[in-house]
Every structure is written in structure tokens, then in C-alpha cells.
Image (cartoon, rainbow, N blue to C red; front, side, top):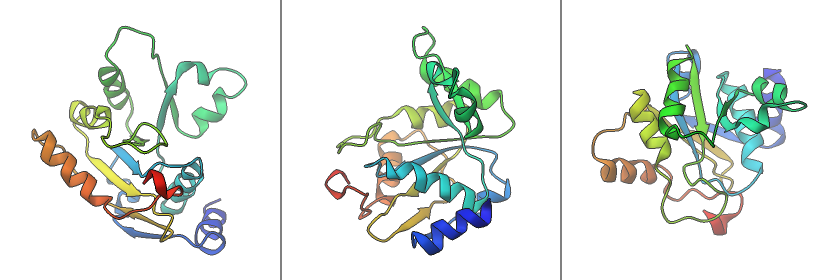
Length: 182
């Protein structure tokens, strides 16, 4: 299947990869991976193709109601992990436990939390990475240049403001599929 993903990603769609692809060699077993700008449903298949091309299994979280018949097996096969959104448990703590309970867990999400234009990213991913003591890996969804740029692992510090400035700088000038939301 990897050859098919490469055919679609590189030849048919014309995308490129730059930056750190070494985490695909299983050296980074746990990480929070953030993808931005998230502006369209097209981001999903680009991300799925990217993970197949670099040969890394990634995960995502979803409400537990998604993981029942008939689609539950499909979401789990794609790397999905159910989370109970209605429990009294803190969501950051609940997701950090997922990292504890798996030998490999690379959770991918969009820091914006939506496909619409936002001025301020949500912070949950950051606190999950800190709580789980895992790095953040950033990758771009640059539709203008048809490129996914992957960062080196970044470990959050205790300076939230400086960390967010650093991460947002990685995405400077990147245009999503719907550029008015980038």
C-alpha cells in the first residue's frame, strides 16, 4: 500500500515533503503532532497519505460514540482512540493517560480546533504534551506550494507565550486549501 500512497501523493497530487522525516524510523514513539492550517476536509486525506508515505502510524482521538458499530472498527484501524467527553475527568489528563497506556502513540490534531479562521489556537494539545512528557511535532498543510514541512521534535517549556510564538512561526506564510481561513 505504501507504493500506492507514494504514487498518489507525489505523482498524481504533486505534493512534496521537507524537513524532519526521521521520526518515521520509530525513533519517536510518542508525540503530539499538530497539523495546520486546518481549513478543509481535504486535510484529512493529505495527512493519511503523508503518514503512509513516511511510514509512521499516527493516532487521533474521537468521542467514544464514534467507535461503535458499524464504523468503530474502521476508526480504530485508522489509529483512532475513543475518549469519553461526558465524564468528569479532565480531558488533558484523560488523553495523557492514553500515552501512558500505549507503547507507541502519536496523536495528530489541529491546534485551531476547527476548520474556520481563528486568531488564537486552542491550548489543549500543548498541555497534553507537557502532561505526557512528549514532544510536539509540527507539520504544514501548505496547499499553495503542495508541501508538507515537518518540524524537529519540540519539547514545551514553562514559557507558554514563547512556545506558542515559536510554533506559530513555523506556520508563517503557509496557505491552507481555503486560503481565507489560513
